[in-house]
Image (cartoon, rainbow, N blue to C red; front, side, top):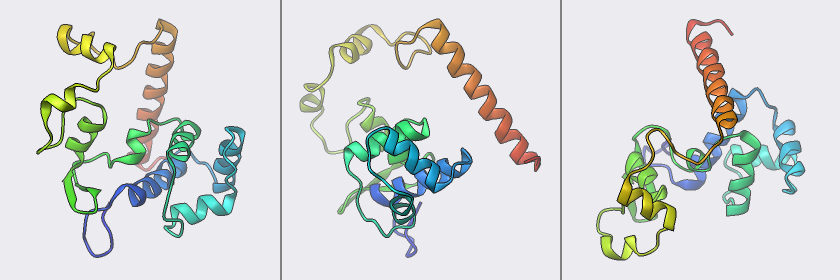
Length: 170
């Protein structure tokens, strides 16, 4: 996700591209995504989706980002930051690898140059417990067994769909 001039893309361009990619992968039209967003209380129309995805709308609010993630059944993190490790423009004057930015957003590591002590003072009790005692193996969030099964079934379905696309079996 780079700009046409080859410079790293920042948050807005990345979210716009990721929304378009995920929407198409989910076989949703811009109208269907707009309907999902409206059902979540976000007054986006088909034209708003198209303008955002094509770069004509140059901003997205935090509430909009969260609604887009819910509507597309994806983590906000995976809309905000590219999935690979390409350079990512964190601020107008700062570029970092995408993997490092994802770890920073997840609260796992500070960015280079940040004060580690200060960074660690703003952390949830659960995250602090996980850092001291270790996160339960394979557990990214607290879920019931039924929720775990649903997640695994959805992942298996997505992997099968990806395999079919790779084999050219749309």
